[in-house]
Amino acid sequence: MNKQQELQLLAIGFGNYVAVDKIVTILSPDSAPIKRLISDSREKGLLVDASFGRSTKSVLLMESDHLILSSLTPEELSARILANE
Image (cartoon, rainbow, N blue to C red; front, side, top):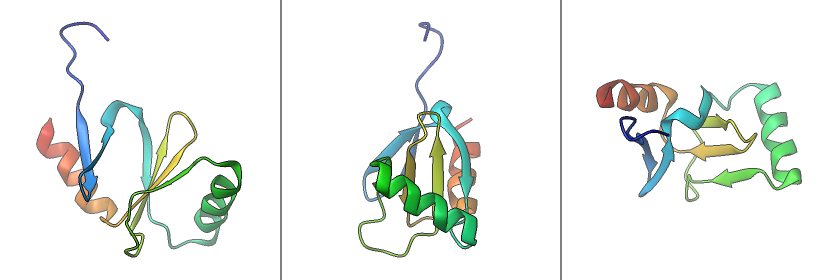
């Protein structure tokens, strides 16, 4: 990262932030393939649950293959990204 690039952080709820440039995609957790992906990530130790016991409304897939669970919807997260640009 050069001096001109500024690290953009995305608030994903409950005081947690992720680097916007490390997000590959933001998914809804409702489909069976995404639920399997969450289960597989949990088994591999690549799951970060940032929902603090609330219902998971979005799943962030990171460049490092980690999955981050958030209680905010994908629409809320994408709106926050667009507001910071």
